[in-house]
Image 1 (cartoon, rainbow, N blue to C red):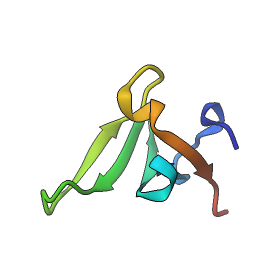
Image 2: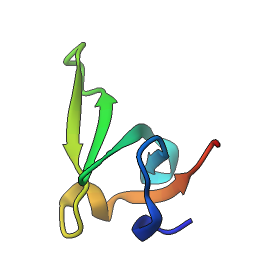
Image 3: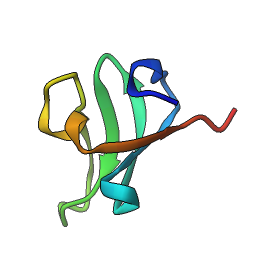
Image 4: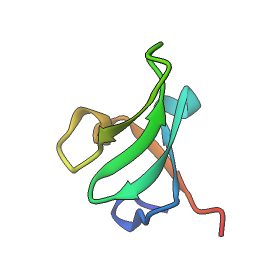
Length: 61
């Protein structure tokens, strides 16, 4: 599935699986990482650095 088809609830795979988040809609991914020990959002809008690191989009349902 392409990045353009992302919908809320999709799993977003970064850097060939080294990081995974859940697409929340409006160009944002819910994730936990970076040693912060809290949940936060990543900007995955087209042109963002995280958008360029998306390697797969998976829909579970």
